[in-house]
Image (cartoon, rainbow, N blue to C red; front, side):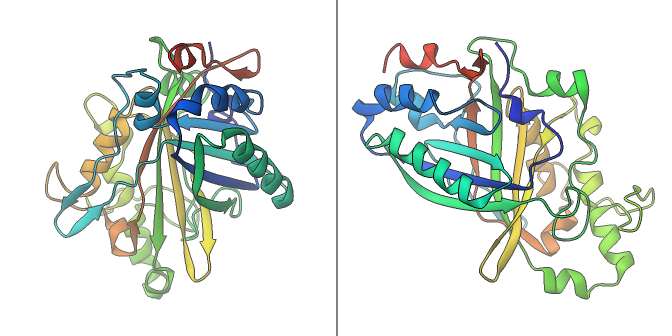
Length: 291
C-alpha cells in the first residue's frame, strides 16, 4: 500500500484544478466510487474523502474529522467541509476540463460538484506575494514518513484551504516590512533571524512543536476575477500537525497572531482522507465493503 504519488511529486504542476463534491444520493455511492477508481491513478488525479462520505458507507476512521471552525483575536477560520475533493494536475486547461467532466459523470448521481478552482504554478513555486512556498518541506524518506499513515486503512490526510490576499495592501508596504511578515527575504529566500515572533516562518516552524509538526505542502495560487490568493494544501500521516500550526497561527498558544493575517484570510477549509493506491489504482476495498 502506498500514498497517492501526487503528494510526493515535485515541483507542483504548471496547472491544477481543485474540484469539490457534495453528497447527493448515498445509495449510489458504491457504484460511483467503483467507476471513480477506474479514472484515478493517484498521480495525475488525487482524490480525498470527507467525513460525510465515509459515514455514508459506514466506514469510521478515527483520524479523520470535520475541519474545525476557529476564532481568536478577531480572526475567523471557516469550515466549508465537503464530501469529496479531487486535485487534478496537468499542463493543459482543456485536458483538465475534460478530466473533470469524466469524473463528474462517473460520480453522478451519487455526488455533484459544488466548487471548482483553477490553480497554477507561479514562477518556480511561489505564492502571489512573491515568496517561495514550501521551503521547509521534508524531502525523500522524511517526506514519505510525514505523509504515510502506517495503520490500516493506510493512505494520507489532506487539509485544503482557500486564502484570499490583499495584494494591493501587501505590496504598498516597505520591502523590509513585507520580509518581516513572512520571515524571509524576498531577494534570496533566506530566513531572517531577528524577524518578529509574528513572522509566518516562526509561527509555523515545524520542528518547534511538540511533537514536531511535519507536513508536506503543495499549495498553488489561484485567480478568480478580481480575487487572488492561494489554495493551501498540506498532507500528513494525520491531521494533527496541520491543526497545531493552524491554532498557533491565530494565537491560541501564546496570543501572538501570524503576520500573514495582515494581508490574507482563509475563506474555506476542509479535511480529507486520501486512500492508498495499489498497482496504479485507488485501493477502495475497505471503503466499498459496506457501500
